[in-house]
Length: 50
Image (cartoon, rainbow, N blue to C red; front, side, top):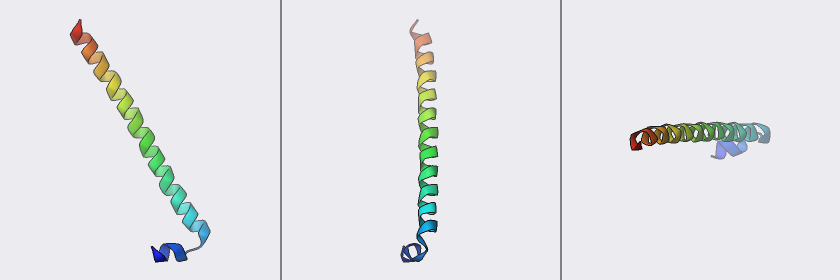
């Protein structure tokens, strides 16, 4: 952690923003996956109830 703080501020901020960007992309991907799984399950259970 000490080496990370000794580097210049620009590269530290760039590293943090890249990390946050990847976390955001992963969150969006998981959200879309959850919505699609929910829709598939709703369609399956709607057909079995009829």
